[in-house]
Amino acid sequence: MNSPVEELKLGPAAPYTVRESPRARYVRLKLSVRDGLVVVVPKGFDRRRIPGLLEQKQRWIEKASEKIERQRDFLRAGAPDSLPERILLRAIGEEWSVSYQSTGAARVAAVEREGHRLHVYGNTGNVPACREALARWMNRKAHERLVPWLEQIAREKGFHIGRVLVRSQKTRWGSCSRRGTISLNQNLLFVPPDLAQYVFLHELCHTVHLNHSARFWALLRQYSASYKELHRELRAAWQMTPAWTSAGQNGQGGGK
Image (cartoon, rainbow, N blue to C red; front, side):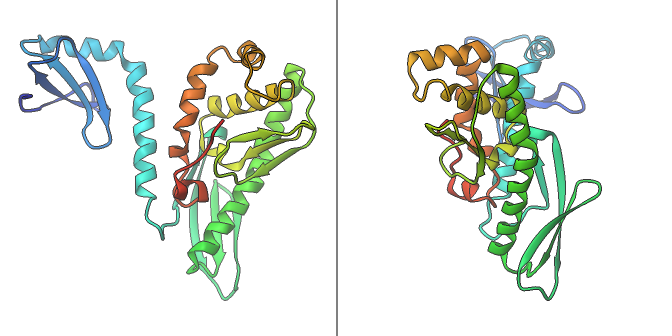
């Protein structure tokens, strides 16, 4: 059985705890929503070495902490009648504060204000209508920012594409038709830029190979050397989609 947890700190912004385990053969780092960062050490380990070890693993800690924070956001927004007070669009590096105003209007609309403020007004007591208004705003934002980004990458890499559509897909981050029409999930706005760009490259390669053959993956490797790691991360990226979106409520977000 593990010994009681000892609370320590690496620095003012990086708290962690130490847990001694007789069964541990080496130092392990564990990070979770419930426990935060836990350093599991073998019995008799010199704890003065821990700060140095954590410094070596700083990049891993930062990356894992980002995932934990996304999980916290997802859990906080998980109530069925919840509406967001802030919207983080990781792909384009924007964070929007959201205000709600009830008026006599029957419908609900969302308009942008200065300072990345989004104002939702109308029958704001109707939660589904508010979500629909937010979804329409997301669709507009994806057309404004994601579509030009994809088209720029296509030009730079020498791909020829047809139309680009934006949809609110529940099981795919993107798709490509036989005619070269690429469809993007507007919820790509919630994922980090490297994952969004991976989806773009993935679909662009489908304009050449409309399958997942060895030739397709070889082509994708030319444009994304770390495609395997990004592909794995994308499988769990639905957790970045807030619960107030249809994909977030269904716990889905992308096969590709």
